[in-house]
Length: 590
Image (tube, rainbow, N blue to C red; front, side, top):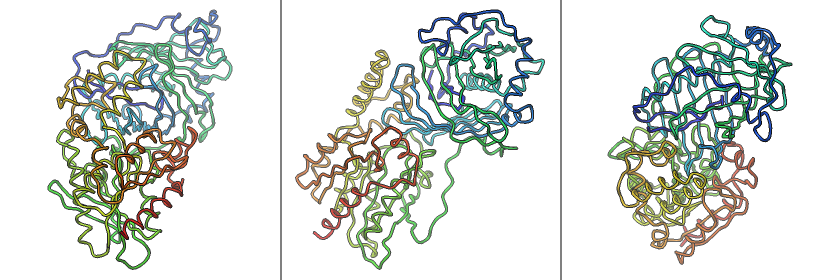
């Protein structure tokens, strides 16, 4: 099986197929046992069963009716059928693995239309993923690449959505469902509950547990297909912190467990109830539409495969003035420094800050990203050298523009390595590396895999085997689902091409003035990387910025880190611009 992984606002880590599987997920109606139901992680610290006793709550329909009234009544609960919900949280791709932060936007139109947009960081890369179910069709867009969901993956996704739909309660009053009151009383976060088992032909059984006093839904238990083993395992989702949202009592926090271990928790940031959702919302994902141009600041670069688009940030005075080309980092990062659901405007703020100090900036969407998406071509044909050629061509084009006197390059993250090549080839007047790697990408990736998969020795061993093959220049067809984000077959040629280059050798070869900038609270690139780069070039000036993270904003705590990646109103660290403009002003005079 080949899978990508995505979270939904109902607490599911979906197994979404990127390739066909010969093993169909089981839909047998085997009930979860009463012992399993009572052994919830929420019942006791040691996982021991809660005290059981015969239920005295009346019929299952009475329990459902009470739950509907608790959430605001039938008219209010009906709003849950068509809605949009956003959630931020953290979780492990695999139970026991290191947690990662994620952001989700879930759009819901029962009975058979669903869309989940998720963004998270995995193995050091920002991952953007969109999954859509529209009736009997489904698609997945992974970092800009769209493909239909295979039958096995689509079937599993629909089965999980079926279970989530039951939380909406109203359908349970239909004769299509068989409801049975569970005899054991299960405590959820210390609250006694009453439970019902829901059976329907062609679907797995689902159990819902409601607060015995208030009637609110506190837990859903179901069987899901585990991506790693291909076996069915028990999943439990705990709902809490109910609040009134437009007349509907809705949970604001969830915690999810698989096989008894917590793997996800999240908090709702926004809920919107909708009358109807445009059908286009559930169509196959397409490349983003070109953004409207600002004719005063727009820039274009013609290439063999299409046009690249950018934006100038110009000083508020007459030229000519110096200009820098800003090269964005890896993944689907656009000219503003943003990814979908991860808007921080870091590069937009950088360009504006430089312009305010008299230095023009050109920010551009790399091929395959944003407005330059049509120039990207197929992912399997993509190579690192193409990004170098593009950056070099931008510099050469600016050399001919009479508005500008000198031309420099600023590379952020992976853009630093790209920039070292372009600076040498185009003979730039100055080069600045911000959060640039001081090791080969393969070495950094080996370190991350070894650390992040420490509790999964088999998966760690396989990941390092794949890495060794790619370092040797050989592609790998079979990739475990947990490693799809990093090693999916279509991205392997690009990864191989990027492995060939040593940032230390590249920075050492530059003869123009060089500046290395690194923040002390960057969780992706270390200060040691910056020191290695600076030591390799006698012309390099090193600037260590205390409290600055990877997106160039102040962040010394986990909440500040998350805010820095998602809040465009937060400014860049002032010392960054002060040090950099002072360096560039001197370099452009030499």
